[in-house]
Length: 203
Ligand SMILES: CC(=O)SCCNC(=O)CCNC(=O)[C@H](O)C(C)(C)COP(=O)(O)OP(=O)(O)OC[C@H]1O[C@@H](n2cnc3c(N)ncnc32)[C@H](O)[C@@H]1OP(=O)(O)O
Image 1 (cartoon, rainbow, N blue to C red):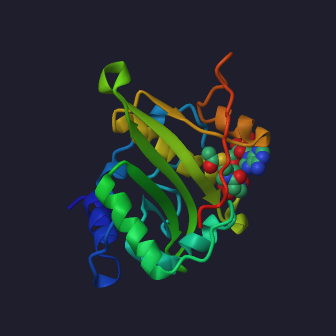
Image 2: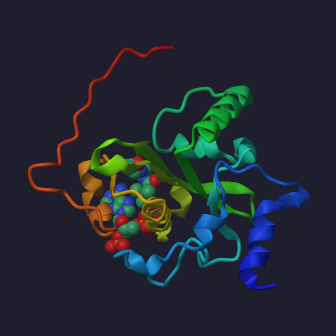
């Protein structure tokens, strides 16, 4: 049995129980980080994140107990989400397909330390193409500055390519433009405006 097979068995059966993933983890093992313009020093990838206590994987239903929502609260307001609400949303995302919430876990402490989401939009244009969107990127503040932001963004960007998207888009604050440019995203002349219409809180 080769190392990659052992890793796949480990991520399927952590703690002796089969774990439920939002999407199949195998696809992350075959992403080719040489396709990304991002520079990693030292070299790391989703399959080999550089530390034996770190794993890059799809979100699991059990991540409610691994600080997923607390991690997201370092990005924006999350609200008070019960286990039932989390479970229902996980089920709906899984059923509808197109949601690739991807996380980094510190397995020493059983906590999530990074996350990013790829959502895939089905189009009629461009011969019924697929378009990816990068959403909800966050790294736990005590782990920042160690390439994990780059690692999680490059992972979901390569995932979009692997799944056949013709492009991947994101919205970000001005101060993060350089960060995303270093990972291959471009401000396109005449086509880089983000506009929003805000509605009253529906709840
Ligand atoms: C599409 C979206 O979701 S946009 C929302 C992005 N998320 C947030 O703003 C949440 C709060 N911020 C974070 O979680 C983190 O700061 C992240 C995800 C932006 C970056 O995570 P990190 O693990 O610190 O990034 P990483 O160590 O890979 O840094 C990569 C490079 O970007 C630069 N960088 C990282 N964060 C920032 C920042 N806030 N402003 C400017 N540059 C930054 C680093 O200096 C580094 O540069 P280098 O490669 O030249 O050394």
